[in-house]
Amino acid sequence: MNSDTAQKRQFAVITDSTADITPAIAYAHDIDVIPLAITIDGETLDDGVLTQEEFFQRMQSAPDLPTTSQPSVGSFTEIYEKALKTAESVISIHISSKLSGTVEAARLAAEKFTGKVHVFDSLNLSWGLAWQVLDSADAAREGLSTLETLARLEKTRERVKLLVGVDSLENLRRGGRIGAVSSLLGSLLNLKVTLTVDEDGAFAPLGRSRGEKAALEYTMDWISKQMGDARSGRFAVGHALSEERAHRIAEAIKQRWDATELVVYEAGSVVATHTGTVWGVAVWPEG
Image (cartoon, rainbow, N blue to C red; front, top):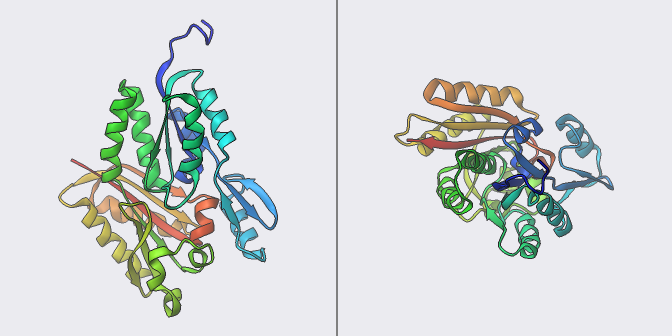
């Protein structure tokens, strides 16, 4: 049966590289990923081309902080055209519009497809975005319609929360992403600072801690608040050049809650450009 006569699936799921999902996860869940780009020392590369170690080595030796850019409208148009050959519609879920122009580029491209492409602003990033993307892929496998999945996504977006812990605010300051976090600058740059992505999709300060031990205790307290009375949930712990710390957080989570899914992952180059060395926890309470 050729592609013209084969029955199309309800919808395709598309996200961008700031979801920090691996190619293996994307393939297993039938998710297409469009990369953002980094420009480092005059060279522009797709997010994911450099390993985390290679990226940090180049960032540390470059005279200027790398810059990042969203996919072009043309790139979105191409990926939507390809997806619609095998799907009736597209759900395209992306990094918060308060942190990147990716959603806007996606929406401009979507206008060419007369209601077949639905762009969803995750109001989040990294695995705060990834959990929403994976939920959409689950909905596709469960046979939900496009509209049913979009309604479900709105509820998932409200439940998924993300904490980001940075060893220094220097990259956020230099990259202009500091926003409401500016109150923590100045002499506090040497402290461990924890941030979240607020309900509007922008970075907001959570706390500041002197030393890693205090910062990780704060992280666990934050997770507890997000979990509330829930005893089980899905968790993702991310890192940039701090894998050992991420595994310590993951072990602490397993000791306190029933983790129906627990992912330890590397933050991609685009995210790490703005955070430097970092840890992160995405929490999705269940029940």
